[in-house]
Image (cartoon, rainbow, N blue to C red; front, side, top):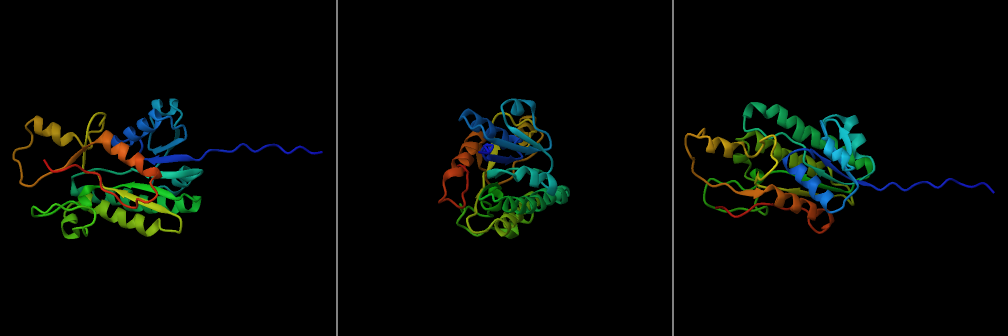
Length: 243
């Protein structure tokens, strides 16, 4: 009798693109603290501490089809956080390349790999912006005329459209999260906290009108993680009341 060699079952992993950024780092840490062992992080460089913790590293770009195809193999869910934060409209091309092209590439690769769940990190700037005192939420139509004034918010708005159009097969679930300004520890690249430092350093010469929401990055990370198994949720916004 010929004995067949048993094939080891490989557990599918959770892919986190941009998992080394401000929000991504908190998501990875919270997953690890909860005992999650099947994590995969895609970034240009993955730190040693993540690799030592058992996180599978895929070093590459979300705009590179080969890198993304490799990252999407054997994945059960994707947290798509990869992006570029800039308040300079001269960075529009770079942000569009990452947010639009990268998202299309990822959605196509994820579909090809059979991934059914994706949680996309967008911004409250695609929803919660007005020129009056009206408080809006995710049920309101996007204020496109206002959004298009800022390259970052415009790129995030069109990123959402790209995800909706390209990750919509039967059985696929897309959740778009729209957190407001992230604040908290471990913002090593100062992607969110630089305006605070500039204010404290008296580099902000005036204070414009209007309001701004913010959320603790650790709370936002917990909210993202909680959505992985909430199949009834399709779209959400993560923010705090205006203060």
